[in-house]
Length: 150
Image (cartoon, rainbow, N blue to C red):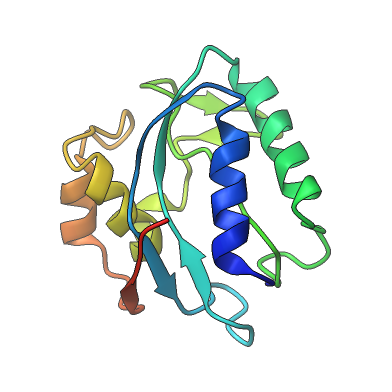
């Protein structure tokens, strides 16, 4: 929702407070996933090198989302911004508040396409598949269109 490009740009800038952003994928536009009766989303992936522990990083992400107008009202509903931790190195994390690697990633082209732009050979620590292999075998048929760069 809102000025999507500006929100992405601000989110990337704010994530720099948690570490060093090494790469940022192009931006892709996709139809809403889950609740589909809403405007298209813009998606990107970035590589952040951080020493921030995962639970604290998640807390920082929630603070960034809130500062950018995110309200958690409806699951998969309209939102100004949504930041996910896809991987945290090769760690496997399963807590009440955080699951890493992101459990839905292998089934979502809108995640895998930008991720493959920056880390095609990265190996998923649970499946043993590379990001590119996950993308190649992904059964999601949702359109993902190149939108541009930040």
